[in-house]
Every structure is written in C-alpha cells, then in structure tokens.
View 1 (cartoon, one colour):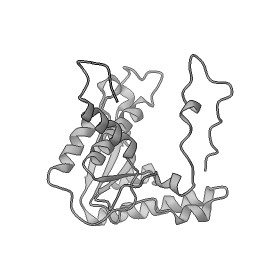
View 2 (view 1 turned 90 degrees about the vertical axis):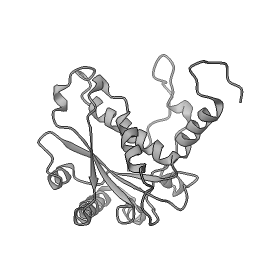
View 3 (view 1 turned 180 degrees about the vertical axis):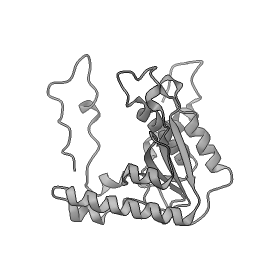
View 4 (view 1 turned 180 degrees about the horizontal axis):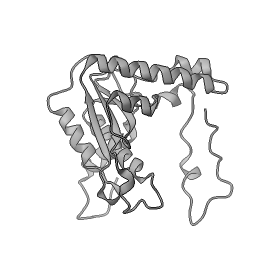
Amino acid sequence: MTRPENPNAFDATAIDAIYRTIHSRRDIREFIPGPLPDGLLSRLYAAAHAAPSVGFMQPWRLIHVVDAALRDEMITLVETERQATATVLPSRTTEFLKLKVEGMKTCAEVLVVALMDGCENHIFGKRTLPEMALASAACAIQNMWLAARAEGIGLGWVSFFEPEALARLFAMPPGAKPIAILCIGHVAEFPAQPMLEALGWGQRLPLESVVFENQWLKDAQPTPTAY
C-alpha cells in the first residue's frame, strides 16, 4: 500500500504494525503458566501512564496484586457478581454461565485500575461531562492492552465486581472507584475472532452503521439488544 509522503509519519512497517496490533488485540480469558518477562510490567505501566487525559488530570491509579490471599478474595467477589449477572439475563443465563469470563486463577499478574479520589475537583474539560475521568482511565487501559498485545502477552479486562466491595478490599479512600481488574499473562494463541463473536454472543457492527456525516443517520441500524 502506497502512502503519501508525510514527514511526521512513521515508516510503513511501523504503521502496519500499529494497525495489526489494534485489529489483533483480544480480551483474553485463557492463560498458560509462566512469569512475565523481566521489565514487561514496568513497560506496561509506562504505556498506561502515557495515555491522554482530559485536563491532564491523569485519574488512573494502578494496584498490583501480589498477595495470593487477596487474589482469592477478588476471585470470590468476581464469582458473586458473575452469578448475580446470570440471574438478570433475560434468556441466556445457562449460556452465559458456560462462558469463561475471568482468568484470575491462571494469569501471571493481576492489576486493579481505579479512578483517583477527588476527580470531581477537576473542571477543565469535564464541567459538563464528568465521565471524562472514566474515559481518560479507559485510554490508559487501552494503551496497556495494545502494548501487551505487541509484546505477545494477553490481557483481559474483568468488570464483574461490585465497586464498593472491591474498594473496601483495597482500602481505597472515599471518592476513589475501581473500574477494572486486569489479568495479564502468557497465552497459547490469540484467537482470530473476539471470544463473544466466535461463540455467537454478538457480532461487530458494520462500520457504516456507526459512522455518520453531518447528522444522525435516520435509518441507522438500531443498537443491538443488551443482554
């Protein structure tokens, strides 16, 4: 593919690698044993901390969980929420419970990502959109996710937990809120498709159904039914 000259662009090999990383990233649930390579976790931290943030607030806080007993308590919290989620699914409870939705028992490392306390004090860029703190932290997670994929390491984002219970477990101050448990480790392979797509749980929408021009497309495909 020929691209026009741009003095600010990376070379073609680097550009292709970035797009390959984006499109081959997967939310990993199955890990194989083995410690992470030396220095990798620090590189992932640095990738997360290089993320953009609204008003340069940098709201992410990362907690590295190294205590086995603490990990076990987290697993219990996740399982409790997984069962609670299953009970409110309208028609796919049994199907949902067959899914492996977390890899905390087998991954090499576990991180908790939280929003810092005092996010509400940051006004720049979020006066009318307070959720920009969450959006900024999500950018940090995505940076880490893409860096892990480029390094051949799997990362899974677990959201099955009750935030207040997890906050208590880690003695977070009032106002801080956990938003993700990240499982990181080696994988046997990266699936060709996202897990939920491969299992028929959902499919990626056509690009033309989510990209509009000038105004909302009146005959746009409706948002899929939530489960």
